[in-house]
Image 1 (cartoon, rainbow, N blue to C red):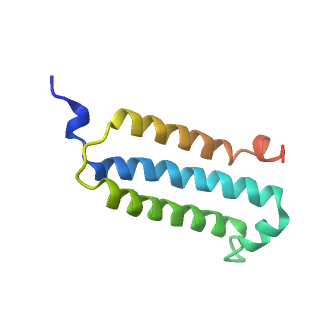
Image 2 (tube, one colour):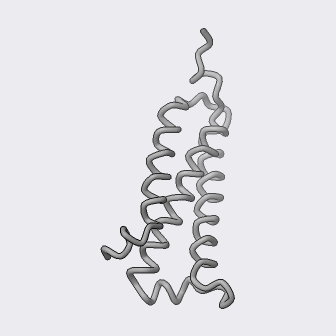
Image 3 (cartoon, rainbow, N blue to C red):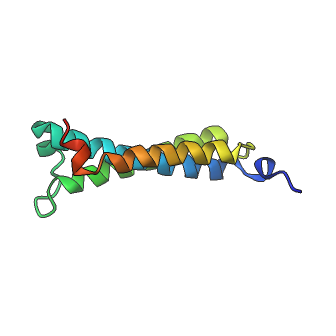
Length: 107
C-alpha cells in the first residue's frame, strides 16, 4: 500500500490548514462583532451589507495570508495529511461555533 503522508505536498497541506484558519477568523470576528458594539461598527465596510462585509473581508484576509505563509514555509515538503486535516477540522468547528447566536449571545 502506498504511503499517503509522503505523497502529499506541503502546498496542499497549507491550503487545507488555511481554510480552517479562514473559518476560525470568521467565527471570531462574528463573535467579537456581536459582543463589542465598537467592533461591529468598525466592520461595516458597506452600508448595504452591514458588518457582514467586514466579517467576511477579515476572514478572507486571514485565509489568504495563512495560505501564503504556510505555502512558503511548507512548499514541496511532505506533511502528515491526517494531522493537518484534523487540525483544520478543529479550526472549522470552532469557527462554525462562533457564528451561532446561541454561542455569541453568551458574551
